[in-house]
Image 1 (tube, rainbow, N blue to C red):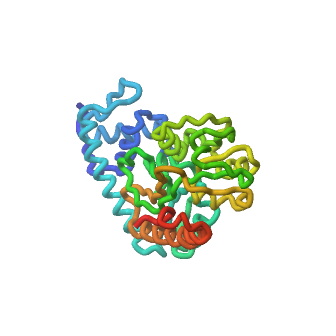
Image 2 (image 1 turned 120 degrees about the vertical axis):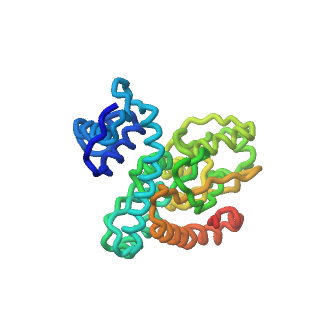
Image 3 (image 1 turned 90 degrees about the vertical axis):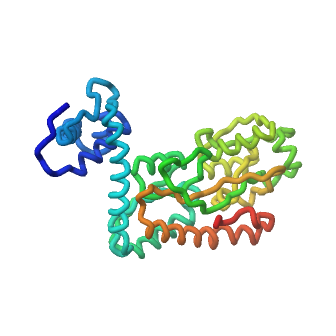
Amino acid sequence: MTKPSSRKGLSLKWLELFQVCARNGSLRETAKESGLSISTVSHHLRSLEDHLGVELFNHTRRPMVLTPKGHVFLRNIDIALHAIRKATAEASTGDLAEARYLRLGTIEDLDSDVTPELAVYLSQKMPDCDFLYHTSSSHELIEMLRDRELDLGISTTPPERLRDLQDQPLLRDPFVVVLPASVDPSVPDIVAGKTKLPFLQFSSDLIIACQIEAQLRRMGVALPHKFACGSNQTMMAMVAAGAGWTISTPLLFSRAKRFQSKLRMHPFPGKRFSRTLSLVTTPDCSRSVLDIVNRKVRESLESQVIRPFVETTPWLKDRFTLID
């Protein structure tokens, strides 16, 4: 055991680096994430151990592992740092006009209308704030939130639990069948794989693809496919060209405006299923920021997406809706 240091101050930087290093078990990864050199990270961790008078890591192991006392310290530090971050966030954004920094991530599904309108709105409400907007898949956004690289994000809710994150459901987006406008066979026959029209699917690494595959599996349907894609626009272009059919959602269909004259959207036959879009935040995200983003996104979804669609496609009423 090392001898406790006589210094009185306990550095917040030590605690933050200890938490990061305990999570990934690597000085190199901790240095990369923090923007510091490996030697500086190592110095801070040693300073923390010297200050406490205990070994927090087993320094002979690779990857680095916590000692029993290190595990106990980490549990308490997680709670303490969460409280500090939450207090800091609330203090800095209690008055939105004085907010200084906000990192927000959204899925591409909202790029056409909702995200641009939200960006303009927030820039007016928070004039002195520096914004970072990141667009990616739901999986990546959730990982960035877990690593505290984002403050809040809008994503498809994954089937697994979000653990340390908090989610607020926004939109119920039902799955539908999208066919070329020139094709008019029985939709149940198409979904059952009884026609020669190929099934075009989303890339398997996307949450939406996993949800569709799970539903088809529950139905006992195994559809051969010759095309998988992560781009909604490319998928809709392929269907519009008559290359196949797909399972999608009204929100995604609404983005494909240039192809819609050559597409037809139909209710999914049999038992309904849908995906949920949620506002996902870190536990220390400011409540005032969360409230204003939640309110604006809901307004935009209702006015720009849901209402126009329901007016032209009445069967979507009570299916394609905001979640209270």
